[in-house]
Image (cartoon, rainbow, N blue to C red; front, side, top):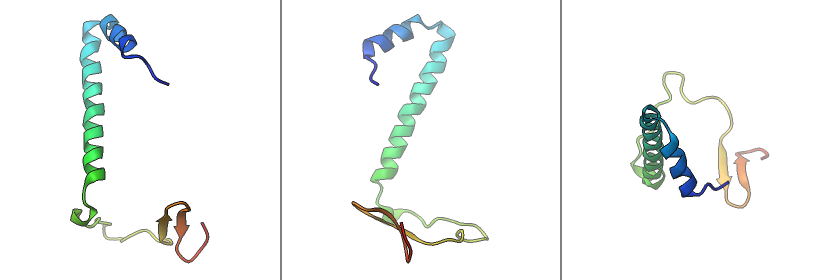
Length: 79
């Protein structure tokens, strides 16, 4: 559901002054999250350090693979 920007501007203008700071911080956090997500998604996975599983190691279970057009496939098993 899309909200016209004009409607958002009216809502911001109607806010009491003390609420505008809260809204500003919230919007900044949304923008920061999007930027961080984009950086992570665009990162070369070869450059990422290995995940530290801790003393217990990786959880028990079967490996899965993603196959385009199929989805997740359990290695040696069914989807």
